[in-house]
Amino acid sequence: PNLADGVVSDADRIVEYTVTFTEPVQSVVEGDISVTGGSLITNTLQPLNDPITQVSFRVEADDASDVSLVVSVGGQVKDLNGNALVVSDSAPVEVDTINPDAPVIVVTDGAATQAEAGSGVFSVTGEVGSSIAVTLTGANSTVVNKVINGDGSAQTVTLSSQDVADLGEGSVTITATQTDAVGNLHSGSVVTS
Image (cartoon, rainbow, N blue to C red; front, top):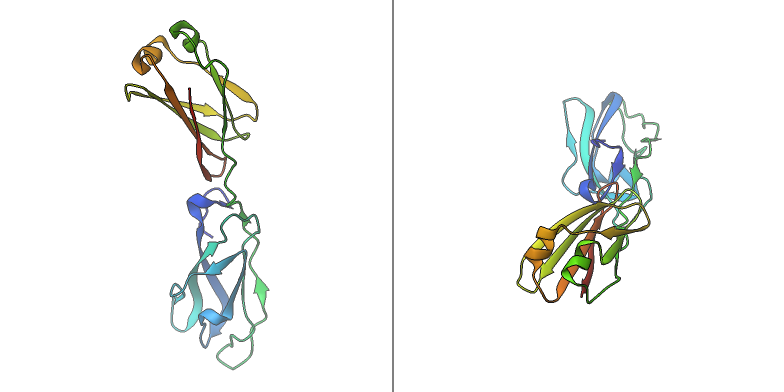
């Protein structure tokens, strides 16, 4: 499989496989390939040489799953003498296509002064190892972005005096999206204060 980190996630749900046979085979068709934890992508099976000793194909991991991908080529594939191949499974490939929960935003002071806003009047909680993108939009439509590394606990978000000035007076909308350690994204949470 073609995975840099060894884990299939939303960012790389399609995995390319190359199967090498110990001797040439007569043919391989899509029905000869079975997949656990995903599905063979139609029309991706290609022989890589003639006579056929290698084939490649792509598999898509199931969404919202942590079932490992395992691929096998069935015993109906025959060598050039008509002997059925011994069925063998690929090594399991770890899958995590489960999106993280929405990050939790808690506003501790909805009527903060400019000075109070700079010291942190809201917190964001996300899963351990995640990256949380926080966007604040002021009443004047000015946007301030912050990125927080999730550690599983509530983390106070502080703003610089320039951030507070940019957001201006009035209500501020806070949105947060979370990307987990393997690249799965949750679209986010929204709070207006």
